[in-house]
Image (tube, rainbow, N blue to C red; front, top):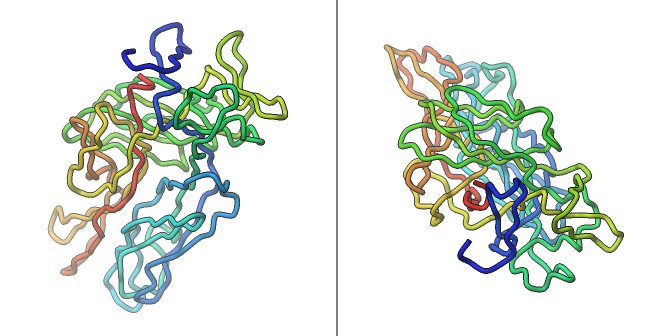
Length: 331
């Protein structure tokens, strides 16, 4: 604890976090986007207005679906459609897909929809009575405690295969799962619809922090409490804010996070295909590889396999902006 600030422990001294460490945000789940690419070539960009975004917040998106294979209709060739990027401008989220030649039939898995969870991080402001705090969400200005999303669960687990978010965590349905690890080839992804973390190429040791909102905060017997003007507690030291230190565009090549112990929101970053036997192609999710403080997209769990005959199938490279948290604030 070398730096100055407001150091807090909520586990009897096992770990400490600095409330004045910079980048501390309340996070709020806003809605799930249900998106389907059109059936005409060139229809690759779809925009959605997030009506309940707070004016003093920034949006971020957790993709649940990275890509799908669709029947070719009059053509015998299946069509691969993948997420190529997400744009955010104020309260408008734009989902971008790779270009394709159109299709007449549904997706081979029976569900034509892509899904994306939208969250907001509430900007910094003045917390009356706590003038020394820098770059922290103004918890005194949060009028609705259900928007005061914080870390509700922390654990360190060794995972090979799947790990499920405990159903008992506060705000289970709204939760965003972040993790830190260090492994040169293991790939980690998160299915927000099932609340399942999947590790391909493990086992690996994961530090997992779950953030959520939509509930009244538990009140410890002692600690630091922040109340709004209505006398409702919108923060207390039983919880830890969402400490954003950086952001970057996640691609298929390693990028340095700029954080010594990075932690990132888990998601599916896209989809990929590879030919593995004869004319058979395998479709897989793209998850995240984290090694030595750098991250990239990597080949995650297999979704399905198809006989493509003599045809190829295409998927775009990963191109997704992700928040970088400081894992040392939690572990």
